[in-house]
Length: 333
Length: 210
Image 1 (cartoon, rainbow over the protein chains, first blue to last red):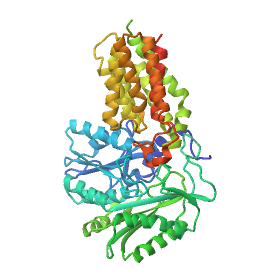
Image 2: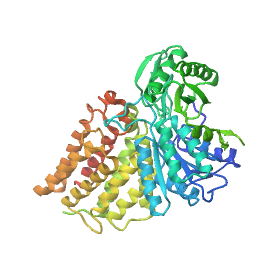
Image 3: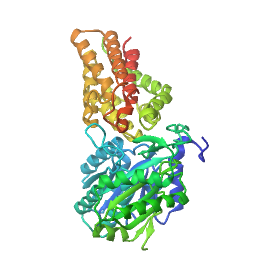
Image 4: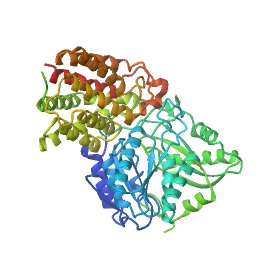
């Protein structure tokens, strides 16, 4: 598979270096251990909000570092959790004395590494709370799995919690809000093609020209079922219905509708998907109060999309609208 | 006969070499039911661990294992870093300060490592994980220690038990880690973590069993 890289082993380092050079006004990049921190550093008296995860999902998480969202992000190797020393260094770099929130996507490695980092930070007297995001309805939550995966809801949680921290809320309040977002958000994705990790150079899974995978994960983990390809309106239905059903929306609910590209799907197609998703939401009597459309949580070059629905409160709407200034999301400034 | 720091270092090197050799194979197993990075991650972690041992010669068996553990935790990432890191850290702690080890010490080390993995990963036998290969190996070692077997017999029995445990993961439904998202579709595939855990016992038999 052709890729614009120099060396598979240097992909993350070189990409993060370039990211730092592109946005010096917003972020500073540290190496050994690697983390991306807002350029103006720890904010005295403000709760620090950090996240992290495997690389390959850009702009998540580094692209969300800046005012009003994340204070720092820890990029791991491609599709591999970052390590506790990165998380510990990032936690200490953003601690302004009010504690630090770790927003963790529910993957075995991420959870374990963040757990170790939180233990280490507490030994260093930094107060840490962790909230695990698990919004992927494609996975049945049961005792027999690692639980639901953390996907698109993570982006929304990072924006809303970042804004709450910016507004001066306490660590307990920001963590509670994060759990509230997680309780009210559901997502599901699909793929037309596989991603190709730089180290393997091969598609992670095989999908025939006329097939699609419904319920795909952001690392190419297989989903609920493989089907023959259908027009986008039908595909959006296959994603929206389980999401709304699982969320248990009621007529009159206000929602944030997030239609995300997995990396390879262009905006022209994504807006056709948004059109249908919006229509379905309205048919269910929902008010699409806010929306987000674009590639925000990707899976390398995978073609495909995901939909995320967040049931909004007045507070969440205010925090969503609050100023944000990061490489990937910017408004109100 | 007892084993020394040099023997343990030979085992660690043999294991790092084995992981390097099987990097692609482990990654292939992982692409079937995981996210295609187990071989790459383990190799990155163990190459770094070997460099750390070369940079600063460890003074004792437990210090050598602790260096490996800390390097794995900071260089491997994924679930393998904390799990293998915890394994080596606990294995080292079990023989803290000892200059030599015998078969029953080795059984205690492997058992302590396994208990650490179970605690960190919250997995049980049958969940299609490392624990499926390590548990029968530890049981075989404990039996061998009780029977007074020599190193060769004890480690051969552990390797065989780990091999059987690894193969027994093939029909299982994964209940932990990314493979668990597949449910029924994880059946028919050998677990990559159980495979790299079997290599621990296989390389021990070769490096320490003679």
